[in-house]
Length: 507
Image (cartoon, rainbow, N blue to C red):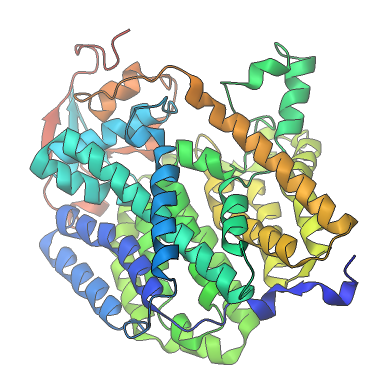
């Protein structure tokens, strides 16, 4: 067994790579939707400002002269893996069963693909503006405006697969950087990352056996809500339900793990984070906290690079209008401190939740590796549930994605680096339990697929979906809104009568 002194020093092993072409391509992937959003949603002065700021920051990026870090064979393997992995994001194609969240997500893609931007719904005497994080949809919606909703659906699948290709490429590069010459390191890292999750399998089986319909009830149902008030979604769960939140957390987190100690990276790190915020602000927030902590731990040269980098200041210009858009009406979204909403009876459940979802695996990793940044990530995961935001406690679910991605990478690297012994066996067993739990989450794919609704707007889908009792203030706000009137292009109303339309999903 490895002696304590042989623990893998993750802080020393990670973050040393100079900016390269993979950084440029990944940033471009995150940035393109932000630029499309600015051009299509914002009034001309704001749109021009954001486009110039975003393109200017991108032009200033380091890495343009850096090479591609992977061989042609590894690149093709990542591409093939991404297409297979992307097929698991079944809502992008509906050839397999899609999680019910796609009832709403399909409608958002429909409205962005078929109607004018910004999207405004006229329902009776009221008007409602679509105000939601839209970055994930924007490239596919732009295709849909030219080729229709079917083309948009194909584009969304390909766009998702491209993001997953970049995730796999970053993982392969990390494996090569940290464990050069180690056979199958990239494959092991990818498998651990794809299947990573907490130990949900254990409480779910227990609850089904003692209070439900038996342990077999978990198959085909999934559901990581055993703790009721909070959830840290595993990676297959994220892909099935919310790739729009996963990708803008995974990609900045993996960029950070490759480049965090490079001042030239620090000088532009704000750009992928700002772009990611237009995809999913809470996902970007979690990645941003880790980025700030990594720079503080790296020391003054990196901090100075971050503060002095003009690309970072241009990134602020890019994100401010989108931030104003996303914050409009945010006070109506359910929010508050955990114990103020659910009472102190939530404390024992919270402690058990943290042990099951984070604590056990983190402790096993720290037996084999050491990292101050990992300690920050685990601390972030511990405090996120204390504040509730959104109808599904999105602060916990989305804000923790980047930190969980780091824990997954740390677990895989520790497993690969460790000598045989009980510590390594313990970590392998815990990761296997998490992977089995994610397999149970993926079992929803055995259910009968349901067809994409090609004609339903968001209000119609919301009225007919399984979410009929949901507060939709995180998607729409009343219009006109004085704070946004000068910011947005003039919206054109779409007349909608949710009570008079045909079924979105005929039974």
